[in-house]
Image 1 (cartoon, rainbow, N blue to C red):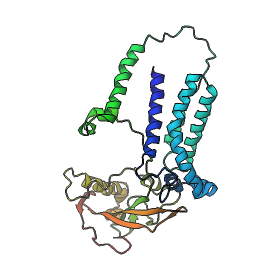
Image 2 (cartoon, rainbow, N blue to C red):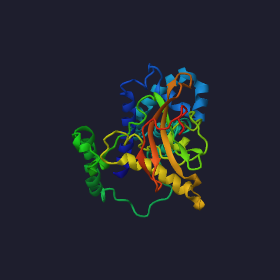
Image 3 (cartoon, one colour):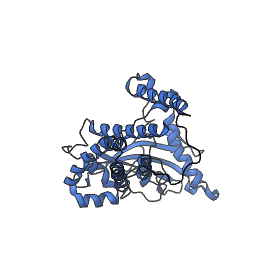
Image 4 (cartoon, rainbow, N blue to C red):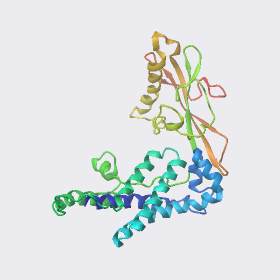
Length: 336
């Protein structure tokens, strides 16, 4: 029962992922995607992706893009058909095909290695194994069937209700069942229209300028190179989903924005500013920028757009307590 439930979960994961791509309103996963197919926009950020582009070219990636969609939609049903008919060769062939797909994703798409390896391991449940060691005590299949069904069937029914029939208010993350029953896997749905990265030049007490975001003495406004222009891989020591747009509105009743910006002050000063009783490296103020570049054909990018998100002056205790005007003491290059 548990093995069947796991296989059905894998079926749902692939169907949800494939249908999500197929239903993309902008048609990013179709052959006629305009201006670029989704796969073309995703694979350009890694060395493996650049090699793939050199081999296939733009037309080859355009052909490969819808192939991924139909592989996700049809792979698990085909594996189930092989299990029902007793065709072990078909099951092994499908498993090998999907493992190769996920290994290709790990090599060519950024931040997908762990996800791809987990996806590869899930196909072990479909492989037919022959036990070489006879069991001394036969397993009674019906012994735990009722208990398993009592646990699994309500969960499956609840997931179907949550995704298809529940009201919007029932899907709020304030409810415990929303966290338990949320079971969507429609990732990488649309084509990537632009890439985003961040930089936070800050002035220290001794007058030097550093990048508070990457914790570096080098100020680099250019798009990070191979490894991807994103928070997690191109900027050391940062998490991917830093919600820096959460508190920039004038009305922020939670105060989340001030806490985020103040954290950068406290972190820098605790690690560098007060080291060895030397306050010369204390962070006085910084500006946080979001930079973007549009994705263009032939693995190219547009000129970089620069947006000042927040300007913060750190308080006496090392925490940022004062919000400055967005153009406070800025030079043309964005430094303080």
